[in-house]
Amino acid sequence: MLSVTLHRVLHVGVHELTPDSANMRWLHFAEQGGDPWVLPIWRAVNEAAAAGRVAPRPRALSELGVHISTRLNFLPRIVQRISAETEALIRVAKERRQYHEFAPGNPGRALIVDNDLKYRLLVDVDALLFELNSLYELWMEWFRSLHRHALVPMPCRTANDSIRHILATEGHSTDWLDHLNDDRNYFTHRAAPYLAMDISTARYDVLFLKSNVIDLSTSKSFVRLSEINGIVQGFHVGKGVIQSHLVRLFS
Image (cartoon, rainbow, N blue to C red):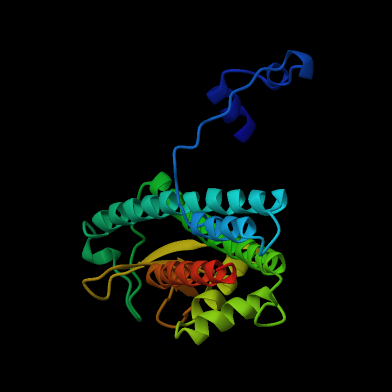
């Protein structure tokens, strides 16, 4: 089904997409700006190299910076989609009938929503957890590589411990890293997310269930969108702290 759909979109078959290399022609697409997180770090490295304090920036380090920048550009697009999808889901939830509501000892009737909306939201939250985790792994490699390039030992034995140490030293929680690791690993390796919504208060909260459970009063096997937002906020804080640390390495 997927391959058929892609062929319809592309209007060609597989055999038409594989010319021999001698006859191949292609396009590249211009980068029109994005997240500038790496730029102050590059500037510090380049200035240190110009002053003779460190070696010039190696190609592998430059490529790693591009990888990080590209993935950082994914995040606002994913978050934007999740926000729009959540707002649409809440609008549907507000049109519910009394018989749709579940409560302890009082099962309701599942509310019908647009299937595409439901699965787009599930896919985008899954993508968000994946991208945040992927970026953190790239950050750790970046952190190790820049410390080696600056000839400065990391504060701790591993990059992960070092980043956590720096965040904690500056008074920031590292709980978001544990939540990210737990949620991403669970939904990637152990289960698929299911969708529900907490309507207990005026501030509705989307729930991503860890199993196809019905009674949420007796099972806490779910992750709240508000908790995932806490991971995003922790990532945002960490982003600034790590950037400042890496710039100081070369100052």
